[in-house]
Amino acid sequence: MTQRTDWTRDEVAALFDLPFTTLVFQAAEVHRAHHAADEVQLSTLLSIKTGGCPEDCGYCNQSVHAETGLKATKLMDVQSVLQAAAQAKDHGSTRFCMGAAWRNPKDRDMDAIVQMVEGVRGMGLETCMTLGMLTPAQAERLGQAGLDYYNHNIDTSPERYSSVITTRSFGERLETLENVRSAGINVCCGGIVGMGEDREDRIGFLHALATLPEHPGSVPINALVPVKGTVLGDMLADTPMAKIDDIEFVRTVAVARITMPRSMVRLSAGRESMSEATQALCFMAGANSIFTGDKLLTAGNRGDSADAALFAKLGVRPMTADEPMRVKMECVE
Ligand code: SAM
Ligand code: DTB
Ligand code: SF4
Image 1 (cartoon, helix red, strand yellow):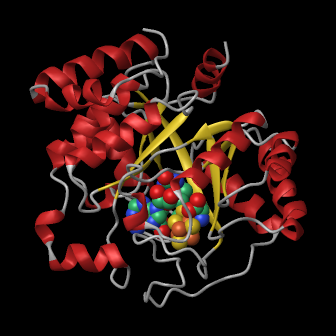
Image 2 (image 1 turned 60 degrees about the horizontal axis):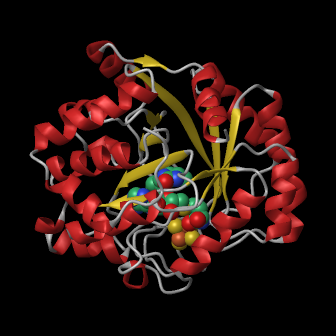
């Protein structure tokens, strides 16, 4: 199957409506046609600038609008970032993702950011950054520095966006994605489920991703990590029935795989509170990438030994650096 960017909402909805085992079977077939089915890519995250963000994303504990007591930090120095990257490489990671709690980078930050990209790349790791909105010139500069991926999530359906975030629009998100693509950087774009949304929103979310001008090279599917003091963390604490059901989560992964066959579908935040059986179903349904280590940006993650034990149980192998590169080459054909 070639890359289709003309999916209709009805087609996406029809996939969600399939009997569960039929849906997972179809997703597994698509997965096997485009990827090594038992390989999972390992990425490591580092928060290079934590907290104090002026945006009001309802899920995020790094927003100044959240009351979580998180301590804000300045941008890390380049050497410390490179040390963390070296450690990630030792632990088997092939991609190093650096995240900053910014609405957008300031031009004065760009020299240090470029040095981080060049240094991490120099170690033979793929680089990814997520720094908020980028101007065309900033994207161009990151592209020239050799940045492999830029993560910028649409997070939810276009219809629901303004009830989760009010300080920027869905359209502004798309503009940065366009700037990133035009600079020749691979797009990493996904979102969060389990924010109390309904299936229509999950359909709208995946439909928006699968009908971008090109499918994102990576599609992170995060399960909300509810944090007390954030709008959505508090909402879920008060209405636990709004939490997403495991089977519906796996359906979301499967529909992402079928609609975006060549993308790396990353089982991202939320694995710490996900059963091994649910994660195994996600791998069956086409997820082929995870974040490793015991920390995401600020939230906990399962840790390397728990993941190694799960991989051994499932017979899953960590992907070598070549596989994502191969996918990348195919995507630009
Ligand atoms: N500030 C930048 C931005 O928002 O574009 C980059 C960092 S931001 C933390 C990256 C992504 O992390 C968000 O788009 C969201 O999808 C995810 N995220 C943040 N908080 C989360 C949470 N509590 N649970 C799950 N995902 C979360
Ligand atoms: C993405 O979609 N998930 C990652 C990455 N992109 C930057 C971030 C998850 C953050 C989870 C909450 C935290 O660690 O603070
Ligand atoms: Fe800021 Fe990103 Fe958190 Fe939104 S998700 S508050 S932009 S750090």
